[in-house]
Length: 455
Image (cartoon, rainbow, N blue to C red):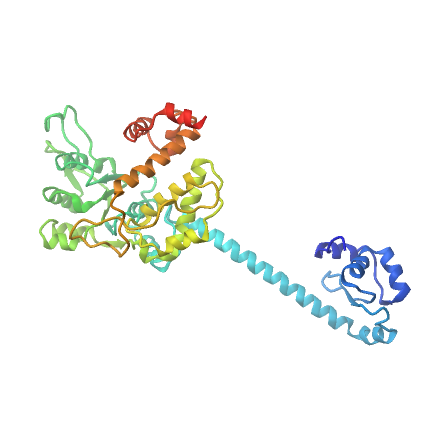
């Protein structure tokens, strides 16, 4: 047999002729095989030597023929055909039902695939920005966002470092009536205490040494919009009272000034600290804590939502593959099993960095270049979850530097040493050219070496 006939080929061969109720045995079957390829395929491939054909009544436009084949050359008689003829209508109904059932199954499968695709699109693009997940815990977060986003209420987002608290803040802003204005952000841990007040509330000219001109603070910039105060637990105690006044009175005074400025700002704050404990310890004002946590949202740690780990890994892999101009070929199952077995002390941020490294290094389906193991903890500090210790020879900072170096090298090589401009590595990496050049100098990466290694 040269090849097996597909379903489409059989259908085409059947429609080449108009069968009548008939029996083909012996020489009649041999003649039929010479005239029609379908019967040649049955004879040569299955050893069929005789057939009985019974065209079925057309129902709903369905053209069908019952073909019974047998290897013995004289298996069917005219009496067999006469006995089948009265049942042609019932057989046609059975065939119609079978076809309808198969079509229904195909439609159901297609609907399930479309539902899965649309659900992924909704999770990653429409409802909640970059928040990816399908676990009950993250759905609860989605529900809380939906409930509070349309209000002007202050929201406190809590959760461990790396869980994506800023994404929650963005979703709250993007789903609010203030979404047409820019979300203003301030990390309270990123500035010295003596500069935070000026950043938040602004200052007048001459308010302090170096204040050569008046400056508008973040709250005034956020007029009519939302301000996101990250790491609110790091805010110095002396500034907490001033923030409380802004929340309660909707007004502020610039540093060095005495004029009252009215502000209409929605405040979203985030912290990885247990603020209740900070209040008890006297490091955080109780009245500010209660004012901030009108509607708290807790973001679960990644280890608490393991069902979301494969979704997140695939999301990040596609994202970085697009950024680097590489095809996404999937993630090895063994690598996914490793992700599910790991405790993720660094949460989503750690997963994102790991996947980015894999996309840079791997040329096929993704696997991990390093063992997944928890970083060391400071003496007397318990780890967030149990896990094997990191080798003493490699510190967490050194490992992060290695990942950063590999990422930058890949981007600069891809751009043939170009740093600036539309085709420069800075665009791919999402950095300012000056920032990228400073990082390259710090990590010992020279453009000349990149170009030489590429050639």
